[in-house]
Amino acid sequence: MRAFAEWLYGTAPSVAIQSTFWFIRLLQATHLLTAGVVSVSGLMLALRALEWQRADQPFEAVWARFAPWLGWGLAVMVSTGIAQTLGDPVRELTSTSYWVKLVLVLGCVGGTLLLARPACRASPATGSSSAAKSIAVALILFWLAIVLLGRMIAYDRAIWGSLSLRT
Amino acid sequence: MNTQSILESIQDSTLAHWMRDTTAAMPVVEATHVLAAVMLFGTVLIVDLRLLGLRDSPRALTRLSRETLPLTWLAFGIAVITGSLMFSTSAQTYFSNSAFQLKALALFSAGLNMALFQLVTARGPAPRASRIAGLVSILLWAAVILLGRWTGFTKGYDFTIPPGIELAFPG
Image 1: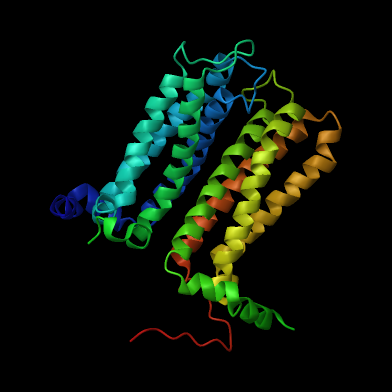
Image 2: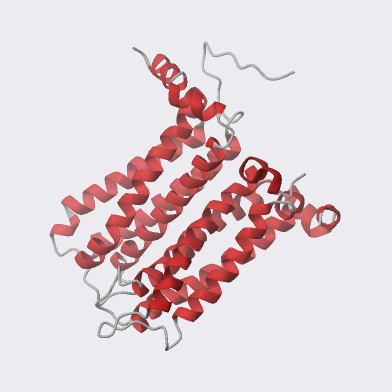
């Protein structure tokens, strides 16, 4: 992985990103702002499944409110994340936090889609199934961990110790 | 007691020493600060978009605020605690950093905007003023996050060293 990251570091797109003073800063700031939109949208859906937010509304209404923000925000977040990886591939690809974060993002996308399935949907009359509530708890933990891990990429060794991929 | 001596005492406090001397303290506190800031922005955005008249229009603003603000305050409290811990590690440096000063100004302005909205705008039927308050709030909180990130980039060199402070760099 390190050899691939070092090769990527020398490619034209990577050099272009590295050499533009303000671009990395803009990417990081945009990534942070969209992380707010995405994680809070995901949390609101999970909290609705747990009936801690908007329990008077059917799940479909809460989905219609937050899913578009989650989807579009995620698209921007992934785009800026890819650009940041291209700009500093050795730092990103050799970080344990980075890979755990990616797995959790996939888990959140899958879990959120599961919540939207008819079998899991919550309604004010029937409430959520226990499976939906379990998924929602996992999603809350995952969304929080994703944001934490994003910042922890900078401190991989201090956080992961011997489990750090950054040797 | 002048500003410099207050900053020095903050920097010499037990907590500041613990932050500097504990390997995992800064990464954990900084990541938690980012998490709180991100949650704060996301939850504020829900209410501000409602003020702007975008989405959620059938839901009463008072109800929306009542549901969302506890999360916002929780995030704000965590951000203040973790931010203070980070500030204590290099109080003099942060205090003199132009990006940090701008962040503090944006934070103060966001608070003022919120207070003005609560005390004046929200009490009367003034949709135009509410929209302006919502837009200003989004811009100010986004600025707080942008300038917070900028502080991380600039800390250590993008400021004028205050008189009487000696910086020792490892040889």
